[in-house]
Image (tube, rainbow, N blue to C red; front, side, top):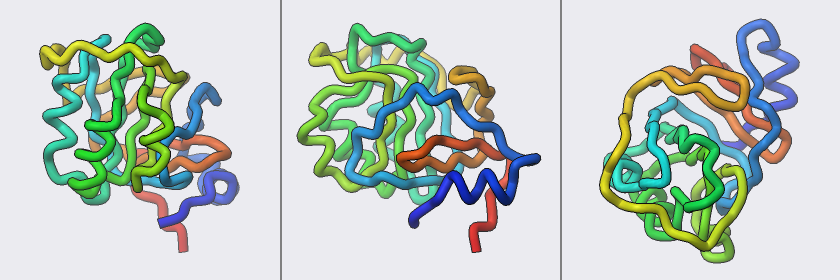
Length: 161
């Protein structure tokens, strides 16, 4: 589904939070949205691999990677796994790699920067916890909407009709 974050801001200004504009679009979808699933990890994507292996229909994975630009939390393998399991998208407060190949994957991916260095895969971290970055706090089951203009967060799903 296509979302227009500018229009959603016009309609729901009192309900939503807007993330600081620090993200770049890396995925094959420029617009995506859904129910928030959270992961908190640092330079280790093992837990991310486990989470995207599950059913992601109607969901967006939101990752607090501590803002690290030294190791990429998202790579082609994770992007393909997420797309194959029907995830709507990933928002990563961290780095992405394999960006040319990821651009061809039907998945929304927003991250800070790209780096060629891979993350560890020891599955260190937490999931389904409140996380905070980009000026907002994300709770599991919040709803998030992203396009090339920005990213907005809502405690409730937004009716876009």
